[in-house]
Picture 1 (cartoon, rainbow over the protein chains, first blue to last red):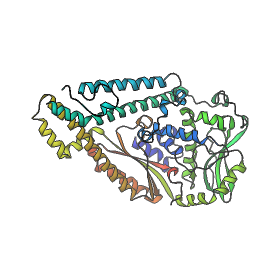
Picture 2: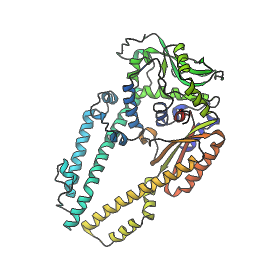
Picture 3: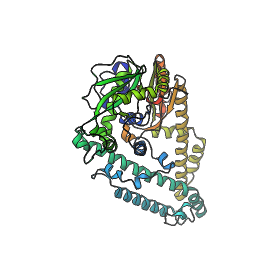
Picture 4: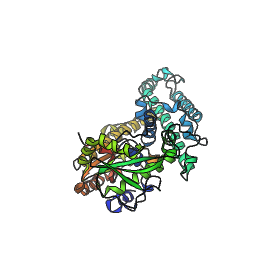
Length: 132
Length: 329
């Protein structure tokens, strides 16, 4: 992998370099997020592009930063439906996955005797140990 | 026994919840990536014709038949332009629009696809976005070896040559500053990848706390052994994180010494980048052209130094200097 990218990107190899072999994440993190920002004549709604950049940042990197920022558009954003394009994951499936994970967490907690089987606030503190 | 469990549970509950939450978020993210990548596969071959790429979009202001000017980068006026170069649509020739001793590299794009309204829709289509991003990148890369360029962000679009000239005049000072700061320099990307298992193994070997827990574990049985085992796992994980941060820091600072400037980027999502192992560091460096070999030698040396961690340092470049367009402080 390194050899390939080094060869392809080394100065001597540039002219004939097939650009579709460069890692898409490398390109997107640069062309969307970096480069000088100059107002063109065609103004796309800045809010839209900001949202897009945030979404792509999630795809490119990690969701952790978005969570720290309090961003949770995946729960409500309708454009996620177009992202799923019908045949993949719909928000309802995401909700379902979320629900399944919650249930799994509750089972896990019950097994470990942490909390009271309710994934609400009370389980944030282990109250009783009932098994082991 | 019950006491032990009780205190263990109390100690572990917040961490456990946090991990479950992380897991849930990771699942959501994976689902999103799957959806986006699935759609990308689905969309091939890329939609080219304006009729299909803007379904139902009825641009009110932009004329569907008209053209805009997509701007790629700014360079000094009078620089040579490779003659065989085509724009992001793969058809239109590249042109230079000059003003005030600066030039913007542009090509014509149909407003039916790149007008404000259709653009907004197309940007949310990862297949379309990939094609345009790669096209933009390919043009910049062809110029890299020949001219100093200031890359523009994707989707900087003008209605006319005059619009481009106005921009060059308006932004003249900052563009000149950026060109001066980039002349004779290259952007290189560096990613530090490590094998998670070998990282944990190395962390385990050097942690005295882990050794003590392992000794204690030998004397326990049943539930006590289980609990202790979990504690041990957590210690190993934490020690591995500390080790990872140390190595990342060492690599980052040593490479900085060969560079004019550097930027730390967020680690990439493996599903989009295709990398294996843990990405401990993702950086971009601005390097004097004559020191690039030094940077690459240093990369090889660092990789060798940490080979026991299964470390792989991937360097890519030269990139259009996207990360360093501000022209310095």
